[in-house]
Length: 481
Image 1 (cartoon, rainbow, N blue to C red):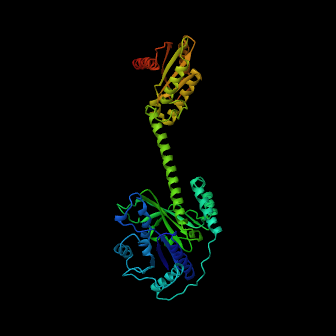
Image 2 (cartoon, rainbow, N blue to C red):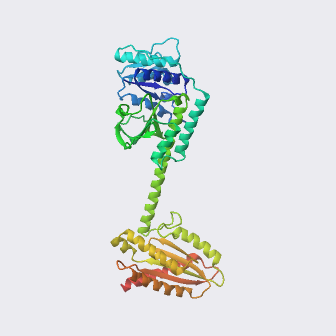
Image 3 (tube, one colour):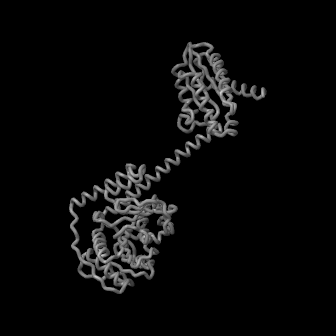
């Protein structure tokens, strides 16, 4: 027999004692009890626009409607304290003809019978009378005095909550899943199951919500041990209480990301819940863990997209000046990095008695290499050219990959005619490059121009002249072919 108990929140002493009494009676009488802490029913007229997600707490009650409970107990006065009588009636009527008892009097509905007793005793009576209503049998649970919850008990519970929060917030549960579960169990949460919805489901006061049909179990932990081969197993939400392996009384909590429900948690009802906010702590921790995992996935996806974007830009010969300052493939500065370094380099070193040697190098055959032999081979060709440029121009220069198939180099020297020496060395390296690969032609077209120091001479002017010279050389190559 499975009974649902709908309450407001555990930090209400009456509600907490009601749950403790119902839990003790359910265990004694062999009843499966599920507690639904949904705070308060919210009506449109008292909807707080400053708390747009407050509505989400109450939707946990909806899981009780189609989940095959044999009976439902509702503390309607507590959870409906902010709404009129008709709204309370509408809430109770949604459970149809299921056996239902209310803790306080509500016209048209059966109430738990009691007189001059505390909420702990009412919890016992509610379970006993619900069993009688369902089966027709009068039963009596053994009464046990409510155990005193000491200052040490409070301290131990807070310690467990802190450990669990630190494990999740400090990302100690994601790199090693099994170790993470063990740490959470060692911290005190030993029996729980976490489910995620197939798709995030909008849940808002304006648009309402509907319980999804299916979910996937993320993980299932019992006695501190994670169940093997259970992750992402498909489940029907209406049957989750039939399939759970958590023994004893269960608490269900939803977790959200803004206005979308992501999933829900089933956890064992333990002495820790006697700290009223323990339930909220667990909800916050689960939400925090979910959001951290979401942000990690988002960051990973963004990083992947940036890498793919950079690869695509590189392969299409587009400008790489909006992604960092380094080229991922060659470890040289990209366009943005090159110009930033080149301006500083020129400002510090270009002075009377020196010469600026500016070079443009074009990988004329890169597109054909990519098209015929694939981008991996094209990447190898790019890296080989970068290596050659480092050897030719040396460390006393600024070399960058400014487009997918184009490099630029600037060098300040006090050697006149250094450009001619570099042209000779580039010709030698170009021939060597041509000879060392039999699969394809890796051919370079390059322009190397030398400029005497002039105070008015700008980097832009030098680059333009070098680029114009490279364009002329490309035209000559085309005519020659």
